[in-house]
Length: 253
Ligand code: MF3
Ligand code: CO
Image (tube, rainbow, N blue to C red; front, side, top):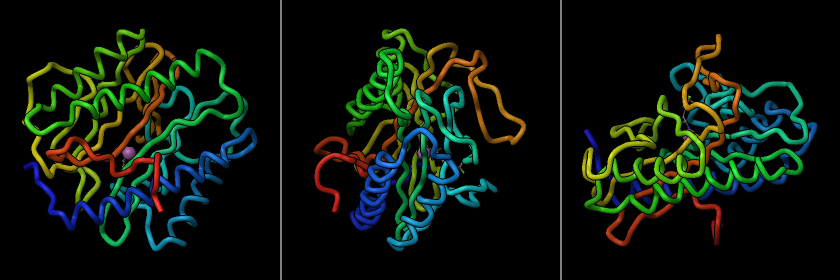
């Protein structure tokens, strides 16, 4: 069942989203060669606690950390760890913030140190893919329109789109109906309506889209060792167009 959220629910999720956006901006300042993803995870826990929020991922289906931290060929659900990040690594930090019952979900890929041209292009295309998808999140459009726009663009740039993980509805819990694939056919799937809140979170690979699961039963990585990047926003469908609840631009105080 796809629910539509009340004005009050959306406001609560927006408050959570603004805090999440701030947290990502703080992370951006801290990503440097030598930092560990465990240190970033600890920072997020502290930052959220200071702001009266909790990390919703921790304990969700037994997931053990506040954040997912996926490095280089890890696609998603990487475990934070004590290994130091080095110059040229890419790392996706994904988290769900719970602020007084309102949830928001956003992932961002960071470069450690200076990015070379190949890395810049992977990140640019991945971020653009997210916004191509968001553009389609209009009342009356269908879910397939989102995935189609993302797939057309990303494949056209020479990358592949991960199929084993999708965006999702979000509300009182992290994952609600519907699934939002980042590939697909225009005009297919459920129709989007005002008040639906969903994540769009394309994972874009340099090589093959296929993934394999680590022994920890959480972390997915590329089968060919190619790198994977991801940008994710939580958005609400409105009659004035998509509203990004986790936007890092503009005024978020
Ligand atoms: N933010 C993740 C997503 O977009 C949520 C994963 S839940 C976790 O799907 F428990 F795995 F962290
Ligand atoms: Co997420």
